[in-house]
Length: 387
Ligand SMILES: [Fe+2]
Image (cartoon, rainbow, N blue to C red; front, side):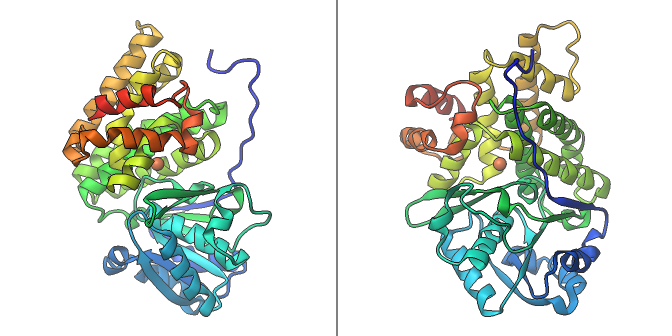
């Protein structure tokens, strides 16, 4: 049984989705429908230099009053402050983010400072805002974070090497524009690791204590699409069809975990990112099979569903056998995508694993893990395995 008699959940997905090749041409019209008059494009230098903001700027026409390109990987509180100061100076009333998860999360936080004023610290936590924030249209240039569909923004406090989380339904982007053309030039390694972030969202939404039928459906189809399309995206980046399917999968996995939450994989990946700068998707990809093994006895039926979505032959197997096969298949998949398999390869010092484990214990995601994990003696062996 996937859900017991006490099942209760709410499901929320307010983002309007616009999908298609050259869908970004609609950016101006989408901003108009939100009442935006003065738009700031939020991005990073790499995305801007790759020319990806040009068509967005063109589509916005004179609605665009500037571009803030100061976002960085693991964007920071200081970046949000800087971007928001520029937005205020230019009297911006709407944002269009063009980039990966860091950029979209930065824009979510900037929208809060534009709307509410004050400091980001004032809003760190769960559901502290009581009104919708400045309109934000998100245009992802990677297909992994699903941030265009979620109510979470994560930025790093660089001074203290911790990640800060704002979790609030009022920061969900109003519109997500998924245009495969925006992802065709993403290099194979980034395509693989960000793609595995989306895959991890699918798995973690399914094994979450807060999993429910609708999020499960979204997550399982995301897993199907990723298994089928991510290898093509990595091996032939210009394959617009696969890129599009991967973008849709990333969005669906985002909606799934935005409702169901994530678990121990993300708690560990957040710590590995904060302490050692390991890119989020790469950290997830390495840790995922080890967390699944840790969880195995708690949710074999759920993992058997994942095996089915992966297209594995499980007809004559028990749930546990199918679950084990799913874990093996995922490990094979990440290997064939060229993603490192161990934390050792990412130069995480073995004697720092305890610090990673300790930090993960206070991460908000860990409470949704299907198996109790809030104990260093439980988490450390998982990290040792992944090392
Ligand atoms: Fe993630």
